[in-house]
Image 1 (cartoon, rainbow, N blue to C red):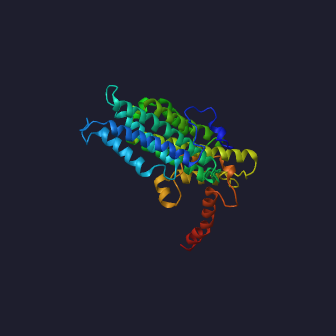
Image 2: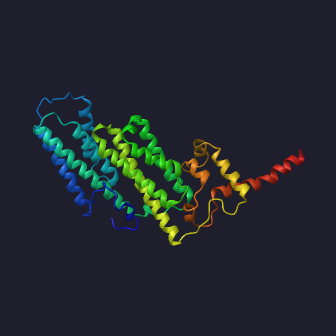
Image 3: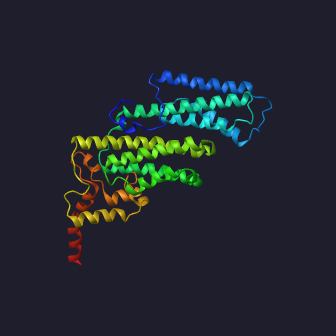
Length: 328
């Protein structure tokens, strides 16, 4: 991954080599997985040792159906999740002993896991090189990206509340993200989200066989989207440092009292109500309270920040209210 933002991941353990030979190379990896599945089918004794409705067999069949139906699809990141889940299901299905079926399932597990890891890195490489990885154009889009990661983390804890017992490092990384948000600028925030992704993958590698398939999928999704958010924050920091963007603060130009009222007015409204009022993604409360001095430098154009627009609207409405009071 030789791109301006790829240095963000220098020295990060757990990242496999991407498929640099294009889709044909990735397809050859998928073909190896297909051959491994056929090899397992060939050595299975009939009738099979597990009932057709056994949870482990159902999980394995579902994982294979997803892989065989969707294949690589159009997104390497999404495909990586499918193959990692298949590897997990194959490992869970390994019987006691060292028979032919056990060997076939272990081989399928290893190949599917490696293929999934390489697809994950390939997806990051594609993202690096696409316009989707460009810097955030202001505070609100970046805060919405942070809110998306928060939603994914909360979904993970809701599905499997006990996973935190085996993932203290991940919980600590999330606590740091939650505590600091975007308040100290895009560069430190990018590092925190990169760490969050790394610890999510660490949980997968360390406890994969004890994870529910749904938990595994959510962890993989969290890692992918945290990496992408980190990349965009990193690129935002690079743009700010290079001086290629303007440097307004979220409430620049407003009197201190007005700016404070604008912030308080937004933080007093619950996130759900804000989402219903404005057609934009929810913004994290702590980011609205603290603001982002570094990140807001990336705001471009002449449009006013959200708080300034609200304050102006209040001033525009004031004469109307006073006129009504005088008539009364």
